[in-house]
Image (cartoon, rainbow, N blue to C red; front, side):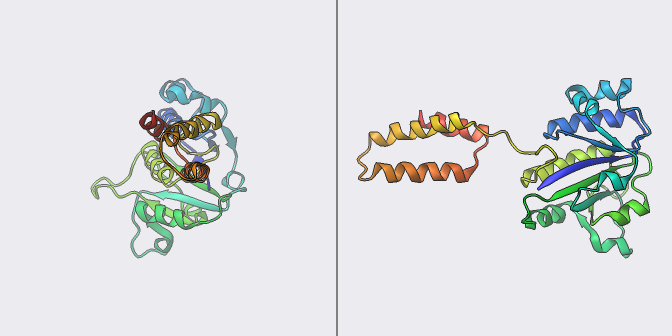
Length: 228
């Protein structure tokens, strides 16, 4: 699945900068802004984006929400208020429930538009109505509304941990084919020293296990270090 991050009409450069920064932290490669009121390349936005400034320079600005979500198979909005008893409640999920629901989707090519905004008044009723799912991040009831950059960070972390990609993928960095070859060779060196009747079968089973495991780089280094 692919997560398309769409920020609706942000007002403050500070938040724009923090959104770029946290998006960079979680591997998002492109941001989409709907009618931004803030200058997304303004001095404060650039300053607070840190190493995410390239996301601002390469961001796509669109004039309508329709344009932003035209390629989305599903639209997910964020809601700071838990609306018990309202008609929106039937599609509103706590974050943990939303992540489980995302995991149940089988279409690997599915594009999910994640709407974030606005930083002063949130998403409007029409925009909430457009959403197929509303995600509520539970906070203390006396102050339940999160800053948009904070909400985005939590969403990217939660969905990223469930291996949901982004427009540019939120996936841990994987070892290269050459590194996997080195790992298989290290395993080969080990089994050469053992009394094994069918080394070829054992070697092939190990290679198959590694392919299925989809190791990230830290896991790869841990395994190959142990073998060495």
